[in-house]
Image 1 (cartoon, rainbow, N blue to C red):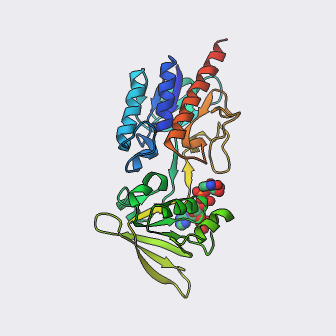
Image 2 (image 1 turned 135 degrees about the vertical axis):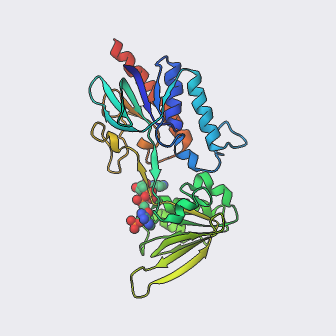
Length: 310
Ligand code: NDP
C-alpha cells in the first residue's frame, strides 16, 4: 500500500512529488501519456521564476523530475485507465494491467487545449501553431498573427498579442463575440485587431512554418466566399478541457469538468484525494500557479495522512 500516489507529470505533479518526497511519504508518480504536460507544447519558457535567460520546456520538466527523484520519488510510465478513489484504500489501474493501492492521491492531470481538428494544425504544431499567447506571443513581436475564438480567452489573447504584434486577426465563427462586454470593447476598439466574423479556418499554409491561412466566409450560405490571410502565427483560443473524465464518479467537478477544491486548500470532495494544477484551475493556467498548487496539495495530503495516524 502506497502512502501517496500522484497522477500527472506537469509542474503540479512534479512539485507535489518534491514536497511529498521531502516529507518522507515516498511518493509514486504516474507520468501519463504526455511527459512534462502541456508546457512541452510551447517553444520556450521565459516567465517561470528562476530562469533569467528562459528555459527550453523539456529541460525545465527534466529539472523538476530530477529534483523529485533526488528525494526518492518513484516513477511509473503509462496512462491511468481506471480509478476507485472513495473509501480508505484508493485503487489506480495503469494501462489496464497493473493495479496500485494508496492511502491518498493527488490528481494533477492538467487540461488540454481544444484544437479545431484540421489536418494542417497538426502539421504546423510548434511551427506557428500555438494554444497559449502568454507562452508564445513574444516570438511574434512586430509580426502578424491570427487568434481563433470569440470568448473571453480569445479576446484576452488577441488584446495581449496586439500589444506585441503588428496586426492581429480575430477569427470568429459566429456573427458576434461571446466574450464579456468589457473584453469585446477592448477588442473592437483596438486598431491593431481586425475581427473576421463568420469565418472558419479550413487550412494553414506555408513552407516549413505557418505563413498563411485559408478561411471560408459564411460557409453554406449563398454569399459563401473564400479568403486568404498572410500570418506568421496561429493561436487557438477555443477553450480548454480539463483531463478529469476518469475521476468524475468519485470527486465533484464543476459544469466545465474542473475538479472542485474546497476551503482554500487542494482537498477535493473525496476524503484523501487532492487536486492540483490545471485540472482544478479554470482561471490562471500558468506553470508557476500549477507548481504552487502542487506544493499545497502535498502539504494537505501530508496533514491528512498524519490525521489518520492519530
Ligand atoms: P468559451 O467556451 O467561453 O469560448 C470559446 C470560443 O471558441 C467561443 O467563441 C466558441 O464559438 C469558439 N469555438 C469553439 N469551438 C470552435 C471551433 N471548432 N471553431 C471556431 N470557434 C470555436 O471559452 P473561453 O476559453 O474563452 O472561456 C472559458 C471560461 O473562462 C469562460 O467562462 C470565460 O468567461 C472565462 N474566462 C474569463 C476570463 C476573464 O474574465 N478575464 C479570461 C478567460 C476566460 P461559439 O461562440 O460559436 O460557441
